[in-house]
Image (cartoon, rainbow, N blue to C red; front, side, top):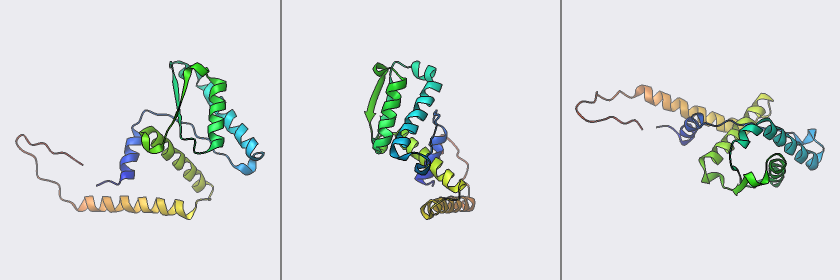
Length: 162
């Protein structure tokens, strides 16, 4: 049996999505205002780079949980600057409500964790979670290699994997 994480990750790999992540260090920007301005500018640049794509839709729905006010403000300001206000719908969401929101959270977590590992800044939590998942997958592989395959299916019965 696969872990929920493994099943979610498998689903994630087959979703028709593309994404862009942004990573900021507060220490490299001029305080909160500098960070907010940089986030807005990066989102505006992304929207302009993909403007033809966004304009191919009658409406663009922006889902965000407003978890971080600075991100919400930068997102709203950038979208309103780059796209027609009449073509944008804002929807407040909880990550647990939509697979796409969960996917976005997972991608952000992966990107941040990868950056922390790359910069040798990983925390004990990052390492513990990674090791737990690797251990779980290793145990699953070990268990599956010890399981005998089922006998061949005959007649009209069908075998289902789960």
